[in-house]
Length: 362
Image (cartoon, rainbow, N blue to C red):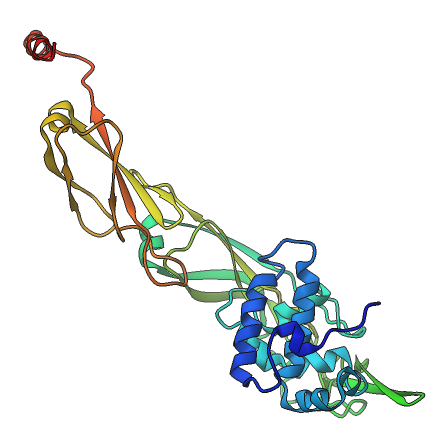
């Protein structure tokens, strides 16, 4: 196994850099190497490496030990779980607007669903899928959605506590309410600490001696939960995740709710990312003589000048009249293609006029 690289080198920062600088640099690298965004074979390992570096350098106590003793100062005192779980709040802050979840998403990306730090595993509820269809106007303006999801909800008899009415959970005597037990092993000059979930309370820190009869102590029953969320402007076809709103299981973490968005075709606008396209039909006369026409946009009609001698399929750009960029400022453009409408049937008088016109070009 290759030796660990210096954490400062991994993130591209120095010991004198501020916490905000370290956080900003980690966010840039995480956006680049997150496995959900970067499908290269090396991305997952890079992401794991920079996340471990950030977990240490974002924690003042661990950073101090690392600065004094290097990797030996951290690895000899903390398990992998300790290193990451201690930085949970830092990860959640960095990824609050990332779209990929916080600490739990990092956990899954590094070790797989249900996987764990140093052998610590935690069951996870199933992800739930909900499909929605939205209009181009919803994409332009954004929309607040209200949906009802069938899933495990808090038991009404015990309000989700799992305890028989009139009772409450007791602090677990085995782990003293910590939910986990530490096992320390001395090996030569080093001390290794491993953490594992308490077998009595299943990592909850509390023990139910008198379970609720309605939910059999799980605290959950089958029901419906009402969920509201904002659909941001500029959204496209795809899957979007609401972290923690999936299925829940006793003594485990919630799954995610996956919102599958399908944008309905528009009657006359075509979309390409944030740009939209519109075909405007003009007559042969207007193409030859020129004219100012009015075309629809996502907001209000705009005037477009047709120049004299306009050729078929000439394209005019209406800058900034497209869709908003998702999670960013600005808008795309609207492209208007001028389609010359050539009549398929002409009466006798029209034919004669065209023949006369044609002779003037000879």
